[in-house]
Image (cartoon, rainbow, N blue to C red; front, side):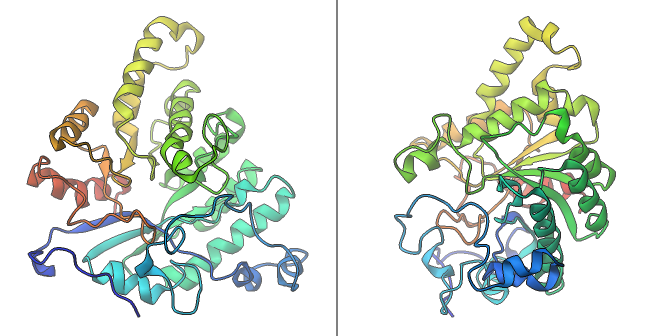
Length: 364
């Protein structure tokens, strides 16, 4: 079993490290057939047969990295997808970095299915049962995300009510879609169910997340530009009045980057001053909702040539609480808690981002 090599010889012993809460860790199915025991008919046979259903939409790019989307260390010896081995995750992440709590964020999004909504709903339910039995039951440090099929928001709400009462489930995950604005009233049963169960709503990209111009030619273009999807979802949540309708709603933007947030808040506030008659249900300045009810993850962290500029971007947000630490294990752009922050971030702030902000926001 391959272990992540420690890149810093002066890293303190585990007991001396700051506590770590990682809010973006990806578990993976070895095969979609792992869901068969959790499916009833007529859905079970559609997955079970040899040449049956192959899964939700596939990612269109070939990856330029040595192990595809994963870092080389996380590749399994038997060729199974990186992130599909609890034992490897425990060794490489939970134990290696002293992670006290890790939030699992599924890469399996039945919401991306554009056909057979009943099948998508059944797959979401099966995935949640699989997650509870095969991951959350194995390690008390793990927390889960409720997978839903948003095509039918009322069925999605029922699924949230079914499994959201488990204290190990801490959020509902939706794809950062470039096709749908989930702030539309059609999807509000999902937000209502999340609030009812005390769950965060998290947005994370999926295989079908696109940029403002669709799918560009190269993966580097896509990976650089997809923050547009989270930006659109965030603006929608404000302008459709979701935060006004659900004042207890908490939202996390996972893996969106965060340096775009100040300019988005400035522009949205500026437009609100002139155009608020169009959205009279929005009662406050947009930036106030974002600071109070939305959080962003550290990964992927941009690193300007002058590290002081990054800290200044952080200060522009106007809140020490908005940023949550994440590694994005097991992907190629993994960030370790020892190396993620430049020295311009004060030590106390680093500790706060590594643990306290997530503990407070998720009410761990």
